[in-house]
Length: 72
Image 1 (cartoon, rainbow, N blue to C red):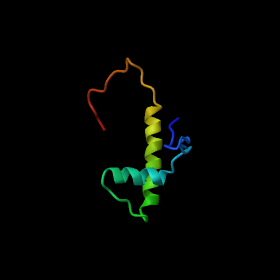
Image 2: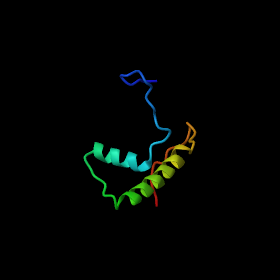
Image 3: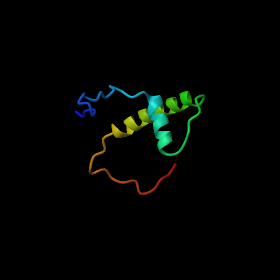
Image 4: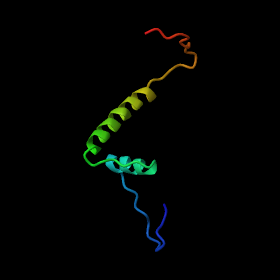
């Protein structure tokens, strides 16, 4: 565990709120998120996270045949 200069241990939060992650990420890429838009951004991030979890949770065998042509 890391320490402060005074020797005390740093405390790491159990979970970072979604709003804080969104604001920090936006700041890192030079964007701002208006406070009135934040609930919608949080909801969309949650939805996309669920979709990503579904994709990551779908196991494909190593010997799966590729689809050579797409037909809608």
